[in-house]
Structures are given as structure tokens and as C-alpha cells.
Length: 514
Ligand SMILES: [Zn+2]
Image (tube, rainbow, N blue to C red; front, side, top):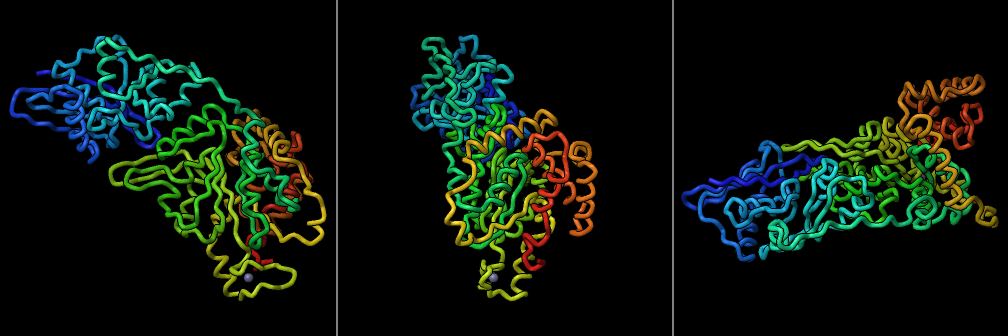
């Protein structure tokens, strides 16, 4: 009776818990069983493993083969266990003796083709990251190397990564007859600061709309959510798409998180240090927006983690999808529960939304072209729930340009200049409290955003006049803090509070209340 143990990892959300692939070979009638709650794809791996072994010139052992993926109560998917299973069978049947010292501390990943070729494994990055953090070495398919490139950027990780494209190459390496060399660290491409910006269109391309541009700057500086209301064709999406160009580059740890989520979502990020910008269409399902499906995949809100989620035509989205945004907007986490598994993905996204002021889009037009009835306006307005509206920090109108706006030269500062102001304001926030102002807790708001006497008086007046909820009042204070930080002021004064209040006046998003 022979037992071999090969190390690997499963994937549940962004977690990658260790899995031991145990293979036992016992005398008896030939059977081949995989136990340990394997999903269909793992059962199918039996066929791939058998064929790969035979096509690579090994013999498939006669006898009772039992493969146990341990711990047994953890759900497992993906073909990543093919290679560990094949290696376990080779060891248990005496066709492979692992001679190299690192063999014992190595984790193996790879889906096998029928001829023994190693194929890429989806979502390998979280597993690779956690393996290296535990000081383990990795052996992965060559086709998966692009996904782990972020891990080759720094020498801070203990273990090494080797890659192979065929079962025979892995065999030769472990026998010690043809060692694979570890992947070399890659040099850092330019990614800091201004170099990240030119990929994005520039804010100075947008004519006029000074208030919207200012709001975009404030939103970028404090990572505040933003709702733009205006008729079609005034440039709401042009403005939204320029937000990414104002945001500071990701830190290394943020970038790794973003890359891990993208890898699990089956996407590769080409721009490592750049914040993601997701723009899902309004036909998106709640599961695709929040995350879910049979494999508990990350949704758009997690793919937008540390970046921007732009929802154009906000009221066209499925009502359930919009309401499901409320919880993650507060917690920064997307929780997905499926019959067999629970997964959590980080979802600290900055929500930017745009909508028309009424069904025909012309409400508020000075020529009075809106033909919507009060009942139509009411129904339209009701599609945006008060709790969701309340969670949108900045709410502004983006009006149609007047004729004389076109005569002015394109005004305003360029995106790289504004991005520097955003970075300065963010540095103040991170130095003071470790998070962006939009993520301040209630207690922190009272402590860090308290305005001076005059500012407090203006706020108290506005609370009374506009009937701000406690939550709205807190949002005004967070915004005021960001406006003060943009101005480089340590205290929050009346000017900052006044500007913040203009971003939250009821009636801006609810035109029929004006
Ligand atoms: Zn209308």
C-alpha cells in the first residue's frame, strides 16, 4: 500500500486554503476514485489524468487508486488538481521519486490536456500569492505565467515560481535530471503618478460644466460617490470616464488585490498600477453586478474594487440590482451565498451614476420642451429609492450648455494637474486617518470633520431647512472635510460646509421637488 501527498490550494472567493492531494494505491480490482467533495470538473479530471499519463509514456497502475482532496468538507472546483493527482499517482506507483529538495515544499497547479500538456488554471493569482507568503515554492503551467507576473515584481516573497508546459517536464524536474529554473523577477515598468494618466481622456477636453468638473475633483479627492443628473448629450458620461484619470495610482498591495479579483473573474489586468474603471450596461443581472452564479464569481462591484463603477442611465438598471448596491456601499464587501459555498470579495468601489432628469430628458429646459406629466415624473423618481439616493455623496445637475459657453476656450486645469491636487489631498487623508474621507466612521466624522462655529451654524440651518437625515448630515461633513483638504486647510470652515451643502440639496436629483 503506497500513499503519496502533493500540495495545492483551493479557491473560495479571494481565499486560497491549502489542499492536500492524497493518492493511495492498493492491490485489488482496478478502480479510480476521487473523494473529498469534488465538483464535476474534478471528476472529469480522472479521464484527463489517465489519458495524460498514458500519452506521456507512463503506465496507468492497475489496482485500487483513491484520490482524496483534503480537507474533504471544502468545495473544490477547476482543473487545477489534475497535475497534483497525476504526480501523486506517479509517486504512489513508483514511477517518480521526488529527488530535488524543493519538491517537498512545492505546491503544484495545472490542468492536463489529454496528451500531457499543461494548461492554464483560472484564478491562480490568489493561490500563488498565499503560497509564496507561506514560504512555499510553486510549479505552475507556463500558460499561467502572465497571471502571476505581479508577484515577480518584488523580491519580498520567500518562495520561487517555476513553470512547465508538459507533465514530462515536471517529471524530469522532480527527478533532478532536467531542473527548471525559477522565473526571474521582472523590472518595474513606469507606473507612478503622471505616467498613469495619459491613458485616460483629459478633463480639459470637456467644455464648460465648471460645477460638474469641480464636483468630479472633490469626488476624486475623497473617493466620494457621485450622481449626475442632466439631459441627454450634455457630457455626463464624458465627465464620468475622466474620473479615472484624476485618481492616484494604486499602491502595491491594492494593485495585488485588484489583480487577484480580476484573475478570479477570469480577466487579466494589463495596467497593473491603474485603478479599474467598470462600466456595466444597464441590462446587467443582479448576480453579475454584485457577484454570484454557480461558481460564486466576483461581480462588477468587486472588479471595480479600489476603482470606479460607472452606471450610466441609472434608472434603467434592474431595481433589485440597484438595491443590492446599498449594503456593499456601506461595508465595502460583497457577500455571496450559494448552496454549497459562501464567498466574500472586497468591493470598495467609487460609485458614479448618471441619469436623465425625467423620462423625456428635457425637464428643466429653459425652452420648456419637457412633455412629461407629473404622474410620469413621480413614477420615474420613485425608481430611485431614498436609501440609495441618500448613499450618493455628491448629487449635481449637469445642465445643457448655453450658447455663450461655446465661445469660451476650453477652460480649466488638465487632468494631470488636477490629479496632483487629488494626490496631495489624499496624502493628507491617509496621513491623518489611514483611509479616504468617504470611509470615515461616524465617530471619526464627529472628531475629524467638526466645523468652526460659523460653519456649524450654517450646517444646523441647512439640516433644518432641507430636513437632512443624520446620515446626510454626516455625508455633508465628510464632503466638507475633503473640500478643506483640497484647499490644504487643517480646519473645516463655513466655506467648506457651504460648498458641501450645495452637493446635497434635495431637489437636485428630484426635479419635481424644486
Ligand atoms: Zn420630461
